[in-house]
Length: 315
Ligand code: AGV
Ligand code: CA
Image (cartoon, rainbow, N blue to C red):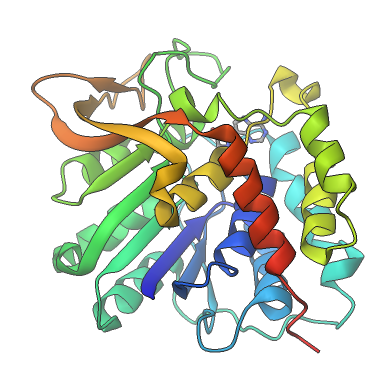
């Protein structure tokens, strides 16, 4: 059993990641933070609380969900952020009324500091949105690095094929990094051990019609029904951008590293336009573990296996 803190930003794959994290038999989820980035933070926090109510297991689920008060440098497109409202309204999450898992009293970055300080064993940090709350946590108390086993982050890209299509940037940047590039640099300059799951590897797991059909055929399992419903909210014709299993890959890699190949590389981060948030490999950089290749069949099987094991624990 190991302690995990999960910080996400409320898009569909973030919420599916939470659902799957709660099913990992050897994960004790000690906290969840939600940042106002790729999903509006209020419905994203509500949905998180309901997912924990419904699919969390006593003794290894978080006591609260902490809402971030961090603000963007570059906000995500509204069209993407809106899916959190629909997800939060799914009937399966509302059968039992208002969420029971309470909101934390502190904002997410302080909740993160407290959870890490209080943990008796080193904490695995899984982050599937911008790194702002971790950068602020490090500024609040730099000694938290002593009790963090490793950071698994969905973000960045090394091959310069970014996914941000906004004016004033050069196409080399991944969105979570672009939202707050300064925070990425702060984290890179810390002594933390980092595994980066960037677009280089997530590009290997697109959301396809076959995948949707695979989940549809297993909808008798409530969690797979919820996953299928969730992904029905996102389509590649919106904002002309394919959806990938970005965050789910990152989350599964944090507990099942055998699902991917990775190599140590030295890398750095550009803080300024037009490459604001660009990650790149350089001999003068700091070492990170960089995921290069996904064992896709095993990955999709693991999603099914975890989701099938999920039962409604609220009744
Ligand atoms: O850049 C990938 C990150 C992941 O954390 N997010 C989505 C995942 O949660 C941003 C993003 C890029 N393209 C998108 C995104 C799209 N087409 N729809 C929604 N979010
Ligand atoms: Ca995300």
